[in-house]
Length: 138
Image (cartoon, rainbow, N blue to C red; front, side, top):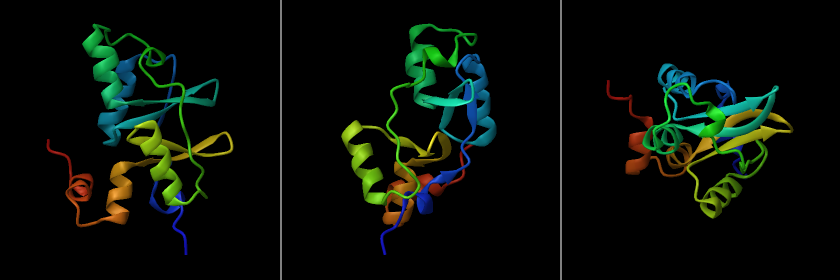
């Protein structure tokens, strides 16, 4: 039987508003122990923001904590559906050279699938799987 994205994704992703300051995104990532958030505008999913976005597009460019999430988020997002085969997620991520992809059920973000999720599921003895399952250093 073909494994679906729904079986490996991280469900119920945390969302932030595109007009929120980037500090809100950073705080949410720290509280939820995640590296990516769904970005919404007027209740519609419009993008994704990652911890790397906050650093490379925000901090490294001199933006302060009051810059908006819209200024650093990726808005041309590639998505997969929960019913898509895992292989589709792998192909999409490889083709777009991304580490995480929002999982959309119609217009609703129902999850995020990451290369870590795929490693844990497909090659649980790999170094990436070990790292992905480890508790964060504090």
